[in-house]
Image 1 (cartoon, one colour):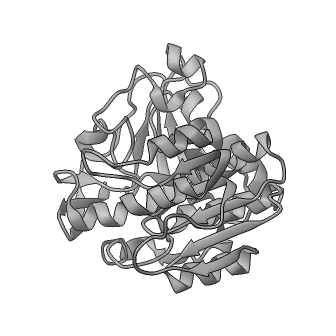
Image 2 (cartoon, helix red, strand yellow):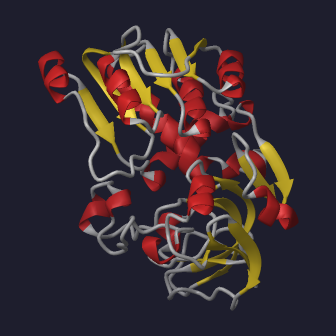
Length: 341
């Protein structure tokens, strides 16, 4: 089969690989129909965060091709979403609903598709075929009346934007939300869309990217352009989302969180240490959350928002490219890139 392969920093190419095979009697083999590029994928490919070669892609909607003897719920021909994290559904963490912390499938950066050996060596989604373990648990039925382009965005980045905005809004219905972008382009815009879909009375978006600002404004957010050094804080909000990827930006967003408010970071901080204004957070009772989105747990809720029309992933600037053009498109700038067969 053919798979899009990261070779070295700034170089990806199609390579031939052995066909994916069933990963045991509980597994399945799927054929990806569309794959979205995660916000991390471009810097990962350009900077060489993990050693190559390895197959790329971890946001996908696919068709089931083959199933193991123990698979009961998923059938060949079914359209499914593939959560980017690999989980078994049966270990203590999974039975507790913490699928992203699965104890059966472990890896250095967490068991996941599209990260090579660092993610456990589970293969990448920009491939003719993809082997999926624990198919009855892991694969999520995908509706036929939603486009594959839209569905491909859901397993990671849309789910990430959702978890940054919607659970805190359940605790504070109608609360104001502040989203500060920078490092992650699509996730922060999905957070804006999710916050509005969940009933936030006011959503503010701050960024230095004109295209992202225009997209946020079109979604219904109040926007503010920001460049240069970070202020001590912006106008405060009870729910804040940090997408800056900058230590000083993170501190500004934390200080922009109201007393006893909730701040979620959807950015990734690669340094060994990241300073935080802990004393100020302590005295003002700020709760801070940082993690990957728990894809398998969140996807059913995300799908419900999409299928009812309350959240449209394609309202965020999306570049759709034919599958065969993947090697070039994967390294080009785009707020959100989706490869479609």
